[in-house]
Length: 108
Ligand code: HEC
Image (cartoon, rainbow, N blue to C red; front, side, top):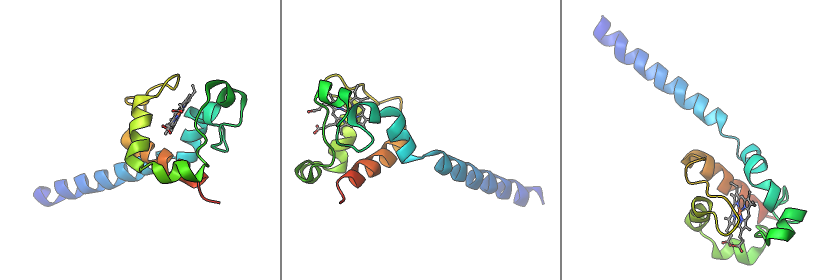
């Protein structure tokens, strides 16, 4: 009996863990917390830090077209100029969720 029960419990635990990880990743909230102060809540860098630092306007159609998702990921990991690197401070799920938010700024 135990040989059947143990794997079943493991599966349940794995399901529970993956569900709670997914619930914890909230792209818009992460963007607000980490990125909005320079790129603005609109993604257009139309706030004082955005102007001061010449941060990127994510709503530009040209920019959206030229950047692939992996380009964006590279920038998040690198942190160009004054932007901090998020290489280690965000995990890949969080970065993917933020990239989705950035893509949303390009949709009108
Ligand atoms: C301290 C201000 C600051 C913060 C915080 C910040 N950025 Fe930036 N970001 C910048 C600046 C300045 C640039 C450089 C603009 C450029 O490359 O012309 C930049 C560039 C970028 C670029 C590349 C633009 C390009 O065309 O190469 C991406 C993508 C980006 N930021 C995403 C993010 C994301 C996502 C976050 C949050 C996780 C974030 N930034 C947080 C200031 C900031």
